[in-house]
Image (tube, rainbow, N blue to C red; front, side, top):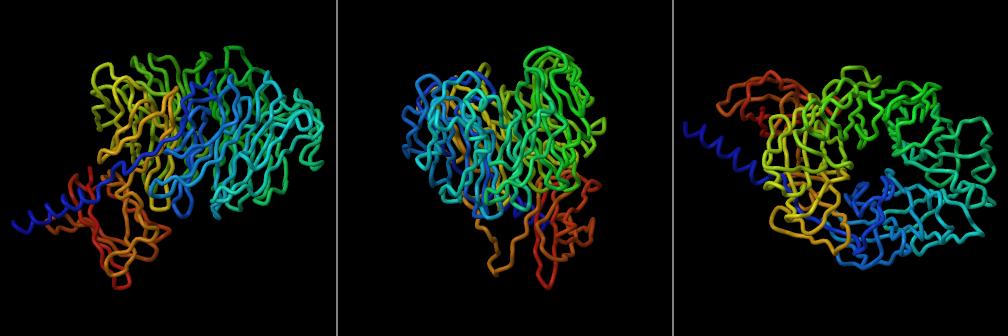
Length: 578
């Protein structure tokens, strides 16, 4: 009996010693109140985060100019007193130390939606300067280069930085003789990168000659294209998508499945006028859609909501697994207002939802889950082994998602940053965490990434003060908000190669606790057995790098030891089955 108590206490102490928490938090932003009247022109918030092979962190955010600084390091913007908004690309180290910042902007609204990174740790972003109705203004890529109308009225721009923030190249595919009206008749929405380091850029083009004469856009009624560039900035091709938008169209997001090369779009209408978009020649007759296209641009399928009411379904982002399943999240109106992929919510709530669907978007989804309160219009999800991470906001003393509950604040307190983890196999919520803000301020998560050690990087928007685990705090410098970034991990910066005291690579399992299966980062053929604290064996088998999942759905709930052996090495891990 004493042996059994020792094993149980050893498990508890080990779990506490290596438990995950918010290790640090950093901020950036200005004292300006941004003119953020649309989904493109957002607050000072982390709208995209990527990490590199050394676990450096890169954040893309809208920022103002007054008192602009990043973790106390001052910078200067280019915005005018009306628009006030520039784009900041900011880098922090694995430990959260400020590295460098770049400001992209001028006297209008810049639209650079997201950021991508290649396997050499180079960074790419693409978008456009200005909006319809903007007065021509000087455009700046930090202090590296600027473009001054009327000598250069082009607006579409794609550029590359190395991991040290040094500009490598930029491309502006529109004709050099375009007028400002012609330039602003084009649009850019989203950038993706493939395993060869080639860029895929969604753009809307009017008839003209682009990419220094390499592509002639005919007057054929087809306007949305995917432009491809290689990592050196060389134009490769222009793929027409079977997507037309003759009516007013709202927030468009562009994704690419890295495993099969298919393109995906999400979009929503701005009013209730019918036929605001066409996919493969078929009209979109409701207010929101998710559509899939083959790599050649041919429409494969589309899924619409059931309502024409604008804003009843909003999508955050899509992620994909190696089986080409699709994970999507967003905000959904309750009261039976709408239906999407079989999901309808009768309760009087507007929650965040998560959904897993197969490659052909079969109905019903593989699983769907939502919480019991309200949600913000921006959020993010990311795959991490056998987990699905999610960030948004949470409210109330009785916030619940599945079997997990969270005291998110006292009555009438404004929302706090939410970080939730799910079993990606069945959608079960396995953990809920919040970042504590002070009373009277709205805080939320809007970007999420996973670094090379499997640690989560969470970013978003806050006003007032955020308090992280261990008591560290950051405070906004004023204005509407500042952006924040935080690491959720067991240490402030896990080493790239983790070994035990005798030099063996440390094997990690996730998720933990788990319900249906666990994944392990093994590199070679490894034998395993699962035993309980009393030594009873429940399961055994073999895993390797290509087959690293262990199914545990048939195990009774409780604590288990996972004994691993391979090439004479013996290691033991602990996990909880719930």
